[in-house]
Amino acid sequence: MGQDRHGAAPPADEPPHAGAATLEATPPQGTPVVPADEQPGALLDDASAANRSGGAPTLEDVARVAGVSRATVSRVVNGKRRVAPEIQEVVRAAIATVGYVPNLAARSLVTRRTGAVIVVVSGAEEAHADGSTTIDFADPFFGRVVGGMLRALRPRDVDPVLMLAETEADRQRVISALSNGNADGALLVSTHSEDPLPELLVRAGMPAVQFARPAQQVPMSYVDVANRDGGALAAAHLVDRGRRHVVAISGPLDVPAARDRLSGFQDEMARRGHPWVPTVNGNFTYASGVSAMQDLLQQEAKIDAVFASNDLMALGAIEALHDHGLRVPQDVSVVGFDDSSVGALSRPGLTSVRQPIEEMASEMARILLDTIADPDRRVTSVIFEPTIVVRGTS
Image 1 (tube, helix red, strand yellow):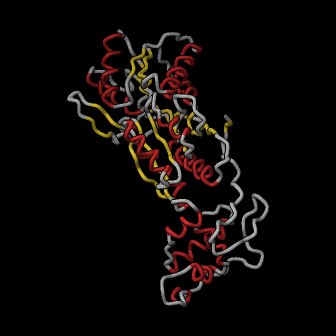
Image 2 (cartoon, rainbow, N blue to C red; image 1 turned 30 degrees about the horizontal axis):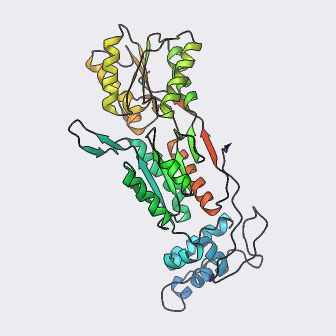
Image 3 (cartoon, rainbow, N blue to C red; image 1 turned 135 degrees about the horizontal axis):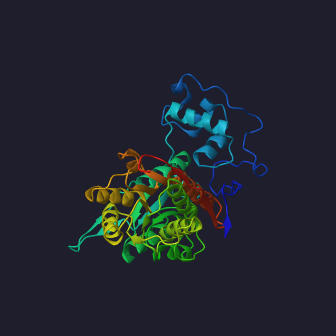
C-alpha cells in the first residue's frame, strides 16, 4: 500500500459523455485549462443585461459576464479540476452575479455522478444498562471530522449525506445506496474494531476512504495520525516534567489507534527508565475516564501523572482526581490526546497530543473525490504528524 502525504496528481479529464453540449480539447496533463482565445474579463456591471433571454440564467449568461467560453463555465460547474484557479474564481463570481443555479439532474446525466457522498458513522451508538441505546454525538471529534470534510467537499459542489451503520441492516442500506447510484462514494468514520463495512465496500467495488487505519487488512485508502509517535510525545513530556509515578488510561485495545497510542507511550517510558506503566482500559467516553481513574487510584499507592488516550477520558480522570482530593497539576499532571475544543476550554486547560482532525478529514474527502474522478487511482494512505500542546494540566 503506498503512502501519500500530498495525494496523487489531479487526473486527466474524461472525454465528454454522449449528449454533452460541448467538446473541448484536453491539454497536457497538469496544465490548467485556459482557452487560448480568452482571458477572464471584468464582470459585467449589469447582471440583468447578461440574461438576455429574460428567463432563468443560463451557462451562456455566466460566460458573458465572466468573459470566458461556455465550455469553461461548464467545466467549472461540473467540477473539472484542470481549470486555472483564477478562472474558477471569475466564473464562480459570475455565477453569483447572474444567480445561475445548475440543473443537477442534467449535470448528473452528463457526468454520471450524483454530486453527493455518504458520510458513514459506525460506533457512535452507546448502550445503556437498561438495554436502550443512544447515538452519542457529544464527542467533539465527530463535529471536527464533518467540518473538515466540508472544507474539501463544498468547493467541489459535493454534498455529504449522513448514514449510521450500527447493524447489519444499516450496512446493507449503505451498500444499496451506493449500488443504486444515490451517492458517488463513502467517507467512513468507524470506531468498531471488527467493523465489516470496509470489507463490504471493497467487495462491492465502491469508492471509499476511512478515517484511521482499518482494524482489518483491506485494500482501502485511509488517513491517520502517527499514533505511536503521539503516545511517545506524551511520555517524554511527563518524564521531562519530573513525573515518576505515571499511569495510563487506554482506549479499547482492539482499536488500532488506542493500541498504538498506548504502545508508543509504554515504549518511550521504558526508554526513559520506567518499564512498568499501570494501565486501565476505557472506551473513549468521559464516564469511562472517571471509572478508569477511580480504579487506578484504588490500585496504586502513589500517582503523579496520567496519560489518557483521548481528551474526554482525560477530563473524566481529572474529575475523579478532584473527587479524591488531588490537585491538577500540583499533585497530578494529566495529558490527553486529540487537542479538542472541550479540553482547550477546560480550567485548567488540558495538555493534549494534537491530531489535526480537520486537516485529516479534508484530505480524506480529497482522496475520495480524486478516486471518484479516477477509479483506477491506487489505494493510498496519508499519515499526519502529531504535536503536543502544553496547557495548565501539566
